[in-house]
Image (tube, rainbow, N blue to C red; front, side, top):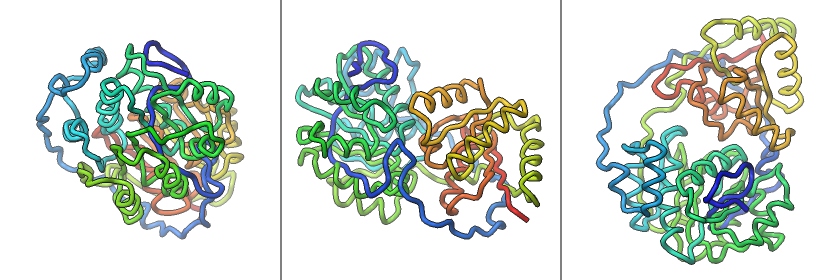
Length: 405
């Protein structure tokens, strides 16, 4: 089990909560749920010029030092250099500290992890019997949440467990025997532990669902409902999502109690991305054109999407053989391999990451300049999610989609 007293790589954390379940074949941390047959996407929809909305300066009402949270949390935030909260943090944290349920509508990269982590950790540190559960759609996002929570609660002594696929079940069982107060995990593995009887959530009174829309896209609605139904009846709930469609609303209406809506999403992330298509006539022509694109000086850091684990691995190896600094991430790799690949990409030790859709979900890397769809996505929604990984932090991104002419 990991604690918040010292750094700890790859093991548990400290939180707790309850409810959740995963559907059919979808397993968090593996390759995800079964995907429907690919939908036809009109190539005309894949060509557009980036449109950067005029920046509007946000004047924060609070400073981090204003929040009525445990002194240790304030000290750790100061050490991290946190002074002025982002809009989602500024508007969420005061309401959450009052015990309100929260619906947060915001894109990845807006600081939403700290928006729920700060009030959640304060509650754990000031209410002895409390526990928290944080559910994320992918292993990578769960680990990123763990890292942020650990740094905010450093020195608190809180203990926790990280429950994700692709990592040792034995280690997770040992962590759970120590009755951690915070659980962070993916729906499939959390459900596995509930069904084994190794995780009981009836005393967990705080729950966070991060990237709810992606979780439902991946087929986890049944698992999430199963998990949520096992939490304490009286609890505080946080729902964070990039969209608020009928499925997300239905889940929230079932499990939230008079939630406060904090909505900060004004445009789709894809609107900040120049988008175009690349037409090819054969497999060799396709590979040669990808090679030429990657040689361009403005292609600084890129995610290349392909449709299967085998194709991703094969493409990554081909790029490495051609001298490109590339690595691959997909559900067939061990958790350690995925962590190392993502770490190398973040540090720019490799500047090309070849990925499947599911493995790439939850990856938050701000300086991606290009997204290349070497294979067509299954749906236009998946396309938007892919290309939105470029063009962050006020920059214009670029997306190219290969189409067989």
